[in-house]
Length: 118
Image (cartoon, rainbow, N blue to C red; front, side, top):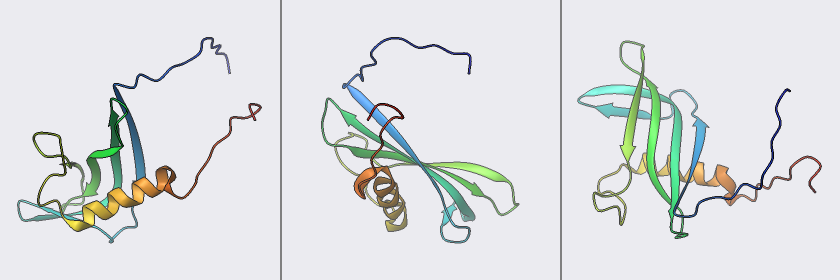
C-alpha cells in the first residue's frame, strides 16, 4: 500500500454517528409502501450520540427488491419531528432490525485491537 498517515485523530463529540449494516436473510422482512410489497435484503442503521448523550437510533435505510424484481432504497426515520424521542407507529419488525444492529455494534461484547497496538 502506497499511503502514509500522521497525526492523532480525535472524534468530534457534538454529533458522533455510527452506521451498522446488516445482510437480511431473504424472505424474513417485507416492507409495504403504497400497497406494494418490498423484500428487504439489507439494512443500514444509523446511530448517533449528540453532545455525548446516550446513543439513539436515527434511521434505517433498507435495500429491497420490489414487485418488479428491481432494487430500491427505502428510508425509515426513527425519531419524531422534534428529535427527542422515537417516532410513533414504527412497526415492531423495524425495531427488531435496530436491536439486531445494536447487538452487532457491540452489545454482545465485540472488541477490537489494532494489529501491533495491543
